[in-house]
Amino acid sequence: MTQNRRYAVTGNIGSGKSTFCEILRRRGFPVLSCDEISHELWREEGYRRELAHLFPSCCESGEIDKANLTSLVFSDPAALAVLDAFSHPRIMERLLQRAEKFPVCFCEVPLLFEGGYRDLFDGAVVLTRGEEERLLSVGKRDGISPEEVKIRTHVQLSPENLEGNFLVVPNVGTLEELEERAEETLKKLGLSS
Image (cartoon, rainbow, N blue to C red; front, side):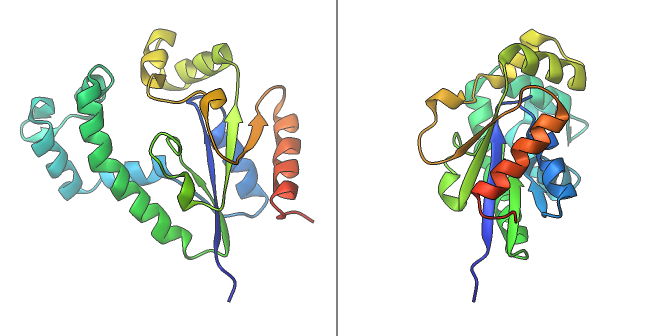
């Protein structure tokens, strides 16, 4: 019986992970996303209730206020650690359960190395992009300032500081060039004819 293969796609905020994953989807590969699972969990009453218990200062009328929580965790490393310890195992459990359904799939995992999840995957693809381009892209996408983007990236490792075996995909140039790099990546993984 062939073992399922799962590959992580990661990179700093604004590096182009979602765009790269969309290219993989268009080529017929299943792609799972930690961010999508996180949004799904936020819609579950039990999850929000547990968060409200952990972060009572971020509650309004007994319901967790996501904007307040976001502001808190990006200004308080201890609060971020509590949130990560609560949310990451739940997200990863759901992600890995879903990955079992596919012979091959890609998983968008923003904090792959930071969270210690690298060994859960058969391979890793790290998207890289210049800081200025990343800050502008995220600022435009999320409607926040470059300073706010920098605050959100302080917990992320820069690609130069990552250890282990992984493929690096520079996201520079046009979408067509990124599509070519995606095809090269698939060939390196033995997933393209």
